[in-house]
Every structure is written in C-alpha cells, then in structure tokens.
Image 1 (cartoon, rainbow, N blue to C red):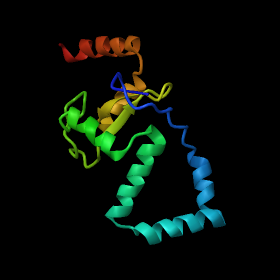
Image 2 (tube, rainbow, N blue to C red; image 1 turned 90 degrees about the vertical axis):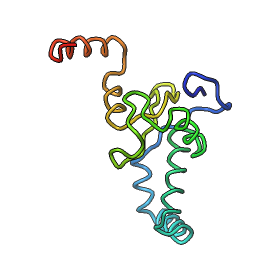
Image 3 (cartoon, helix red, strand yellow; image 1 turned 120 degrees about the horizontal axis):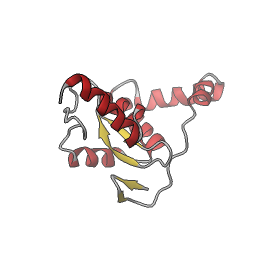
Image 4 (spheres, rainbow, N blue to C red; image 1 turned 180 degrees about the horizontal axis):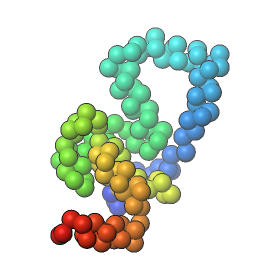
Length: 138
C-alpha cells in the first residue's frame, strides 16, 4: 500500500466496512455482550473514544493512530488543500483516500474532502475551475 505516493509497510487495503451488518450485529445477544464488555473495559470516557478512533482507522484505512499523526505532522497539522488547521470546525481532519485502490493520499478538512470526492477526476475538476472562473473573475 502506498501513502502519499510512497511505498509504506506491506499491507493489503482494508476490507470494505459493512455498516449494515455491524448495526445488525449490535442488536444480537452476542453483539450486546461485546458492547457490554467494551463499555466495562473502556467506559464512555476519553479512553473509549480513542479506542474507537484507533479501531476505525485500522478497519477503514489500515493505519494506526501513530501513522495518522505522522501524516498530519508532515502536513504541518493542516489540510493538504486549503491549509485549515486541526479543529477549526470542531472536527478532526479526515483521511483522503482512493476508493478504488485504498491508497491514502493525505489528510483533508471535511469541506475539501467532500469537494474532491465529488470532483474525483482531473477533467471534471478542470471543468469546475473553468465554470467558477467565469463567475469569480480570476
């Protein structure tokens, strides 16, 4: 797997996370017991939130919190596109990745991540720039 176009540790892209099956699992007896064990172990404290964050990073992107923090430091704790700092909107910066390959491209604010998610190819992005150029007067 590559991170920012560079070879990283040898890993397979994480499997697609199935939210529906996870939701159904939580409503089974086995699922309720698993949630109960996690609540007893971590509580509803900051420790539990960090555990859940680490789990989501590992399951969704195949990286650890340390790797996320390393990416963030390389970007000077800012969005790779607009330069927004961590926490400007009250949310952490999110991981930008290619949905087809699983390759992590960088860390972005929510607005930039949504924007490039919808304009996900260069041709479409150039058309958007041309369109906006007519109104903004660059």
